[in-house]
Image 1 (tube, each protein chain N blue to C red):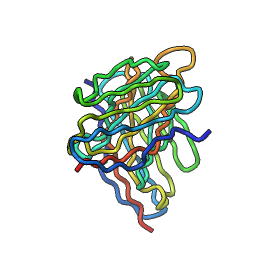
Image 2: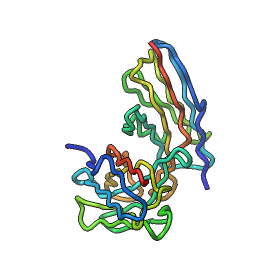
Image 3: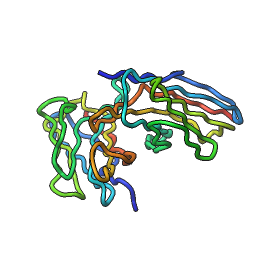
Image 4: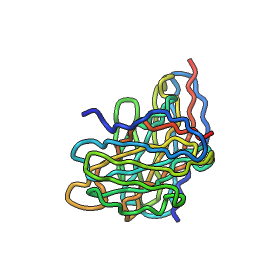
Length: 108
Length: 118
């Protein structure tokens, strides 16, 4: 089956720093989403981005479908950005396959 | 909209008991998904429905698990009998497909039910 790998697995930042999270997938996909799971466990949609670039405030994402990767950029990180970031892909079915996640800790 | 609603938020039960988890999707969404999250296996899809019909239940771990969607605004996931290894957070999600499949919109997740089987 498709492999969805994220890097780095863990990331520790000081408030104000920028970061880039990567998601690699092993097959062509119809859909890719980025989620943030906050420390309380809630999964929050960040981006629906099968291709191209999108921006939302301090966050932006780029997916290069032909090269099978997506990047999530976090600028001027805040302590509230802490949590686990997942990318998830959809193949030619309706199933969302989750990556392994990147655990981010932002310290003041 | 209130988003996807799940109940209960926490469930503690003893091995062998029946457990029922409930989900109300976002109104107007035609897809509903059940996921399980554990430390060992991460987030995995158990089953999903389209227009109340189960489409793929290949992720359901074994016959002890069953899920139904009697109408567009309710689904439940049952575990009978429950075992300690079923302890996990169970998420429900819904999405809207528009004019065709696969879903063209994002999946919206509920807050999850944290299940502990003693």
